Length: 86
Image 1: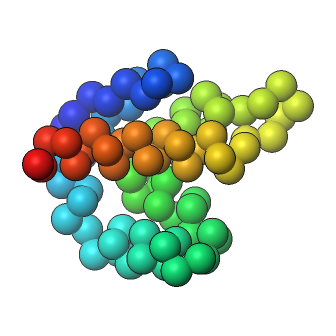
Image 2: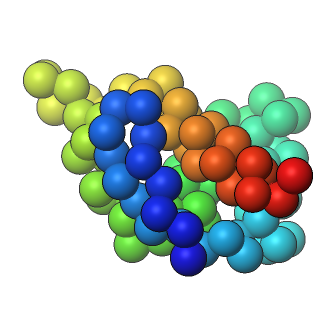
């Protein structure tokens, strides 16, 4: 497990082995092919039971959870995990 602190201050504990998950790989591949509907699945696979904490952290004053804010956090998680594997 790796503790990751995002630029916005959210601290998450992520399983470093998540990058070795074919279902995550499939979901990311679909995202890269333009299927934005896979974002929730990627967040669930990467963050697990911390998904609600991610959404709450990103929640705007009007109650919405901006997609861009969530995808930025997931990108930061991937960057942190990939830095370890470099």
